[in-house]
Amino acid sequence: MEKEKLTVLIVEDQNINRQILVTLLSGEYKVLEAENGAVALERLKEHKEIAAILLDIVMPVMDGYEFLERFRETLRSSVPVIAITGDKDDSTEQKVLSLGAWDFVSKPFQPATLLTRLKNVIVRSQYYLVSEMKYSSEHDALTDLLNRSAFFAAVQRLLTDDPGEQFAMVRMDIDHFQTYNSFWGEEEGDKLLCAMANWLRQIAGRCQPCVYGRINADAFCICVPNRAEIIQEEAAKIFEKIAVYNPEYRLAPSFGVYEIHDPKEKPQKMYELATLAAQRCKGSYLEYLSYYKPEMSRHVLENQWIVNEMQHALNSEQFEVFLQPKYALSTRKPYGAEALIRWRHPEKGLISPGVFIPVFEQNGFIGRVDCYMWEHACRLIRKWIDAGLDPAPISVNVSRVNLFKPNLVGQLCELMMKYNVPPRLMQLELTESAYMENPLIMGQIVKALQSRGFAILMDDFGSGYSSLNTLKDIHVDVLKIDMKFLAEESEIARSRSILASIILMAGRLNMPVIMEGVETAEQVSFLQSIGCNYVQGYYFAKPMPVPEYEALIPGVS
Ligand code: C2E
Ligand code: CA
Ligand code: CA
Image (cartoon, rainbow, N blue to C red):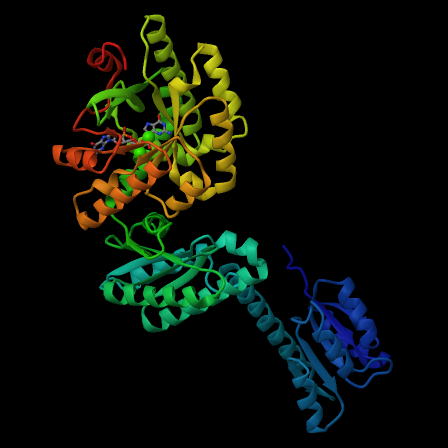
């Protein structure tokens, strides 16, 4: 098969000279002609295939100098140019080269020399084009760092080239970068990313041998020798730099470290595990560096299992209501209970909510699970009423996913009507942390629910940052105090005096309190001494299956 000829553009005003060049070149090349610079620019626009230009300097209309100047501004400026002129002056040569010509030939020229020079510039330009393409296919356009695939390839080379060294993959990103981007604008976001890239370059300068790159959005990664102190030191420096980067916005990075034990492992996999480690520090400002541990992978697999099973579990009624009685301290008698979910899995047995609730909260499934629990609580109350009993209220949990649903009030009222249960018998536990997310709306919801006859319990009171604001803004019916105030770990005297103050304050506001997590006789007598009304905890009773509860409290009160 015949090789396709490359195209050369001859720019020369004198017909005779042009013909000489055409004759010389047309054996090897396809030739296009232009009689001045202006025509040449037109030809370049029409013919994308032009591989080189032979350019006369002295021409009417537009001479070679002007052509070179204009040509530099065009998208085709990487096409090599050889200037040809009869002018013997050295400064001409200097001038055309500085304007971007690749080479220079004086008239009269040796035909063989011209052909060789032409071939040379074409080969060089094609090599240049290929390396240019290679460069941009491997680099991120914004930061000029290696991109994802090039970075992974570079890691593989680094690990094979230096088998004696132990390496670690450090993955870094900026917490809530998307929020920063949308708040300050993309241009500011880009600036921050470029600053990150530069900080990474500085680390790279200090931690040789290493490779680094930008993986996507705000995720960067660097593969360095595994020296814990140095990695920690460098991460701390970046933490400091990011913290002061924008004085009006508190930025924090997260670092995940994967220590490479098997250099043959896929770099993508190493990166995923470093990412997993980094997730550990999300949401915590001061904790910004975390090392990968195998249990993190187990955790991901467990969560995946939960997601795969949850819908079927709901359909086949694997979720069960357990009841934990609450006790009045004045009488030490049970009064009502909290409904707590349990998952009775046919193979795995009883699973505690601490394992699956966080997963459901994250994927929103908690919304449906809550409704399921409310409905089962209603059925129980109905059953007791039908048996002629006078049941005490059962409290159910309302997750934040449901709290901010617009039809929450309607949905609960419908349920009460369906089972003909008075709302005062189903109390609602709302977690204090939901308040912080949306104080205004939460206040409105609480009011709406109370107006329909529901009593509202503020769950986990004291666990958040703004407990006192909650008290001020939202008038709940009962405070459930978080069990951390009873933790026997440290500062017990302090916790106890805070607890006493909370109970005093609640008393002044005419708000009954329930203390959670009461485990010992000593705690009970302390709570009684400071005027606590109700307690819920293992000391009196653990959460139990419904039949056990019914046996414990024959009158269900
Ligand atoms: P919570 O609402 O604060 O429930 C109290 C938790 O404290 C329960 O854990 C209960 O078993 C435990 N507890 C009770 N007394 C003691 C004690 O004396 N000592 C200790 N150490 N713990 C005690 P459980 O049942 O494992 O539930 C954990 C969390 O899961 C609940 O905390 C609640 O946030 C969530 N949860 C449980 N059931 C539901 C539900 O139906 N819907 C929603 N949205 N969340 C639920
Ligand atoms: Ca609760
Ligand atoms: Ca609680």
